[in-house]
Image (cartoon, rainbow, N blue to C red):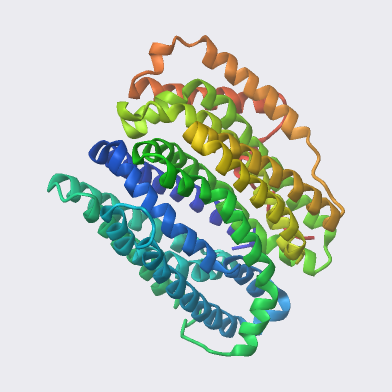
Length: 483
């Protein structure tokens, strides 16, 4: 199978599996929100958000460095050595930091339920962290179908655990235990299949570790500052407002979390290609991939903003139940932040591909500090609405700064032909949604029909405007062979 066919197959499998795993994940949230209610779902959100802060810090930039290092032609013969050392370093960092979480939680003004929940759920963050090293291997080998299967089976296990917890009325802790089991299952499936390509063992070559840190420290700093403006909104909200308000915001944010897996999945495919093209000084191919990636992100991002202005409340009632209708307003705002992430993601990965990640540190510092100030001012006054608007600010700021840095270090900026055509196509979609009577999509069946119909209207408008063609839909043009 040729490179083009492999990449196209790899992308297709990921898209299909991501749809399936997303459906499973949303259905788990569907059950949890109805069973736990706003207060207990707020506790669940607080627990997961609190621990995710330590898990993200523990990344240390290793996820992206792994892809970059094993994709570089000069490291081909040392792939196994690099992977083993990165896996060991990842294990040390995640265990050390994730165990720190429950200790710190003891001294925070959280309830005993949240503190014990943090202790239980801490284990669930160790396995996905280790999986990231394996994902980098599968990305390079263009065998992401193994990752897809592990994710689907993990989501099935989580859904089963939630269903059992609800059926036997076992409460929040049982759901947290299900989270641990499902994350462990996903890791061990990936670990098993990784042995087809290499044998992952613990390795302690400190010369490799030193080289890794030289590459990863800029990424580690950007991740920490990125963390400040991505996660402190929910953390501050959990400390100064009620768990009900955290639940309302957390339910809307869960929809956002589902959406933004798409750009990170896509950029994970693109990063090795951009890295290899830049290393080979094939700048024309680099620019083609960069442009097509940007176009794809824009085509996905723009209609989300427009569609959410019409359907956000109905979507949140579908996801969380009637008690979470208030989450619709939060989603209406946050969807703008999600769309900006689609765009900033490709700029960030382009910068990483040309090995200029350290140049982004000041951008993340500025965004983090100003966003933190905004959260501290507006969350106590305006609760989750204030948090959502500051999140918009933070994503807009970092997108602008990353776009500038990408241009500066690649001497290329994607054109915006697709952007303007996407806006026009979204206007057609908005007209369609505006013409529908609201009662039509206030039930589950009508909402699904509306979303599918609006998507078709948008795609047809793009085709009529010659913004996309058959090859673009199949994503072949993005990944054509390097000549």
